[in-house]
Length: 213
Image 1 (spheres, rainbow, N blue to C red):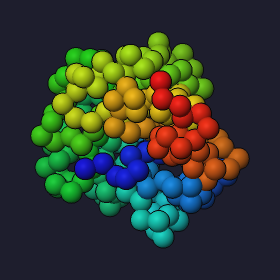
Image 2 (cartoon, rainbow, N blue to C red):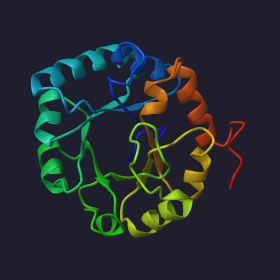
Image 3 (cartoon, rainbow, N blue to C red):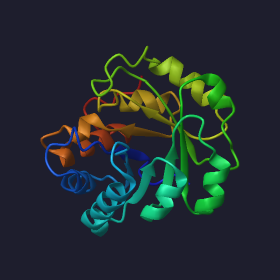
């Protein structure tokens, strides 16, 4: 089962306005309850240490903390689950991390979505739904209709990723997305709590830009 709310914050310390753990904590103030640590350029030992710092900073909010990377590193960090790169072995990750872990996978084609391991995966991320400043040149964007095609193809819940903002969050939900994943908009925000809160309100249909498509 996906965390509630099903809005995933993916970390990137190179984009963060200040200390990464502080940004994550502020996002939790804004309603975030699911964070995936994605700092793949760091050596494993440094990832584990920074993950522990993130855990401590957000402890009061009890978010699900997962890790982008190999399942064995997620296990070593004491993560609540793992997000695998495209082609990752979901079955092996599930066997290692156990039935209560969150296991996700990045996909970029309909064939990959159709082949998603429904017995082992909790979700897949689909991208790029919209163009994003975090990964310029990463496209073309799927848009709402493309996202809907992935939702129809996948045997597991689909999380929309890339270019997600309060003004398109509800569009993703209406296209069938089970949740959203964001990185740059919150990492770069001067007020991460306000940014995440606005995203959550839009997802719930309560924000000023959340009119249904």
